[in-house]
Length: 601
Ligand code: ADP
Ligand code: ASP
Ligand code: MG
Image (cartoon, rainbow, N blue to C red; front, side, top):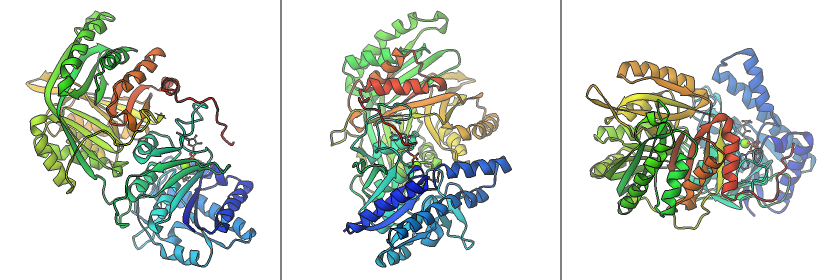
């Protein structure tokens, strides 16, 4: 006897036959003695069709009317699923988000769930009914009871949030693939099914466009400890479990917005090695990190950014005790790299900085909330701490700073984010995990670079604060290592990626800011792809990055940008090489299986 939430995606309810098959599955689950809440998406590609209709009427439709329109898709499918159950003799009732009381912010097209009323659902369950709830939609708390939607793919989030609110035993997400695979089977048919994945790994993957699970659904599962499984609605196979750490007994009020940061971590005794002016061509990173891995040096953060002209800076951090070894490798390789290419680029140069520290904020609630990173930068600026390197991932933002400023930085961040548990040192994970769990490709990003930004506390805060004000989330952020002194002021380039749909707005806004603050040119490149590997087992393991770079080098794919977090390494490559890069990396890590997946039409 369990209380289960089952969610069926668009293809799973895409036709009358599919709806009947779903009803059969639900019926069987009830007959084995369980109580069931079923969350459904709109049938097939209904939502896409509605979006298309809207854009035929208006180039830029009003967001309120979009929600009014898009929420209709789910209203159709819940009624049909309920009817199909009733046909089987199973009492059922369909409810819209408003009827349940899925209360959200009054933010059209991307509302976050504040809280879910459970009374009506429990009442119907007690009556022996299956409750069918419309996914993706909610209602604002304002007097006008406005219809809102959670953002595309948001039914997963509805389902997990309902499971959390009802304290259901588990939540099953039924879709058109057998579970979570090592990569998207539409791009790599040899992708293999995983039996489990940690929430942190899944958050990184989901945010990279592995759209099998909405990242916010994973965030809720992690925060509330909801047992979550992704399965095929075509078979009875067990699927993939998404495992959460012990839940912290959070309040169900402000469900999706309560706490964005739940840990502050730091590492001292770090050093940074930077190689300046290395050639911008395939194979360079592979060569450098290949040699570093052969010397068994474990690097932590890696960043690479591009520059005017065609040279790159690559920088990485290591623990101080192995600095000498790392520096020796970099020094030995620098002249080799230079001699291979255009001599007019000047000398490649090795720069070492001792006594640096890394401070990070971590928490599943940063996704889509650009204000969180901006607040970190602003807090560091107020404390007078200069940021030397930034590394971002969906669940963590890390800044490399001067070692001497670490205590001050940590204290300021703890106060700003109201963290009262003892701060932690970064550390290796306690459980054995695969080095690389999955590979993802994100083709929806664009790169912006701002030339010659002042290198002083407050610059990142200003820049990312401006973007946050416009609700534009920034993904990879890379500050160049090279510093030009212009008129006595040290200046660096800063590059980052944003969602492609935000790119023009971001560029326009930053061009205005550049005039005001004396920054240089703002350059936009939309033809990029980001390919990433994710795995909790890569912490403290030398050679993982080298292997990824080597796979790209073998296919003559040039790396434009690199960033890493503890459990993820991402490279930006040109858009047309994105799929090839994904396939190469997937194969290099031995993730391809002998079976190929056939996705139901
Ligand atoms: P639903 O309509 O059921 O919500 P989606 O289309 O939103 O289904 O998500 C399922 C799709 O996610 C799959 O058909 C697959 O193409 C895609 N996908 C991307 N990455 C992965 C991955 N790593 N594992 C499984 N599926 C993936
Ligand atoms: N129907 C919505 C969409 O297509 C929500 C969902 O399917 O999760 O985006
Ligand atoms: Mg989906």
